[in-house]
Length: 264
Image 1 (cartoon, helix red, strand yellow):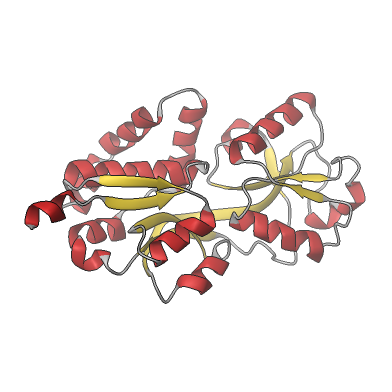
Image 2 (spheres, rainbow, N blue to C red):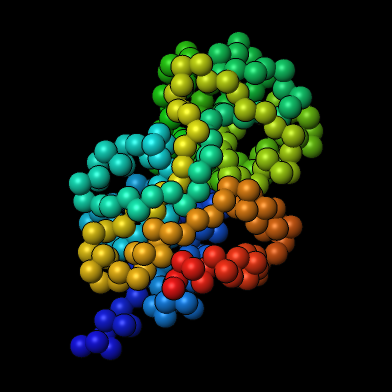
């Protein structure tokens, strides 16, 4: 029945706690709903279940694949079951960061200063690629006195804010794009053993069945691009209290010509 096919929602899975995932997914969803006239269901979860949902057909797509390094474990596990449509955002970075007043520049210097950091690295959600890599970094750099704290992206940013206000030493799991780079003077720590990898990109991953079910959506998702600088600018707006719907609508309006070309 054609009517049934038209009302079957597109299922996008994402990590709501990650600002870049939240923004990218909501912008794509709004364009699909309003320009391609297809209902969208958003499924918020964590990194591992997000990948598994698309691979097993419980969701149609994700726009939050941090490749080739951060989500490498998920790509290797599911690459035979999914299709990578290409980059949404390029120039990403992941690693550990400190406020600019902290007098170290490399991961090799963390252990010697463990007491100043209160023996902890402030992390985010368990299962995130950066958390898996940080566990590897702790071993690779012999940080036997340091402990990785699992929390959330919001909690990590709150801890960073508090430490900066008090000029205390803190080391956090960090990445680009993220709004903290616009809010604070931070510096990335050198990673000579390349545990976190080089600069990467965020890709769109789909379940192969979507190609037959919604080819116009697949075409749009293949073309859709959201520059890193735009994501960070929108994060600042969210931090300043603007509603997510207002921020995403503003981006779509400002890029109406591109949106029209993507959905033609």
